Amino acid sequence: MKDFDFIWRAQDEIRTVVNAFLGECIWNLSFNENRSAIELELTIALDDDVVSELCCQFSIAADYDGVGDVGTKIVFYI
Image (cartoon, rainbow, N blue to C red; front, side):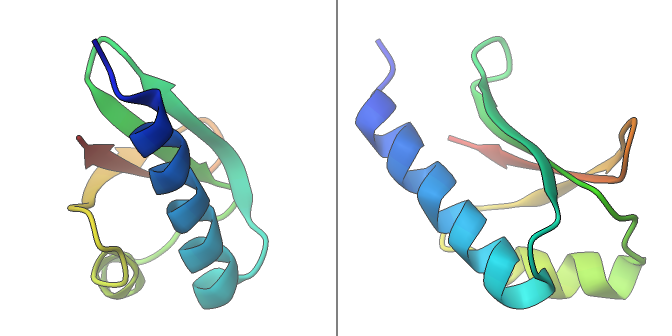
């Protein structure tokens, strides 16, 4: 069983970090149960250096997941 309290707290942290680092540019932030991961899609496309800098800001591991329908995607495996 998933610890949804942990997932919600992690999503709050992700939202806070993104808003502080880039401003309000979150298109989608959701938990994907099949991947056991939180998926983040931004409204903007970031270059590799900015993605790397952003991923270093999180307390949980973050990986670049490509470009989605709208912008850059980042995944957090939990």
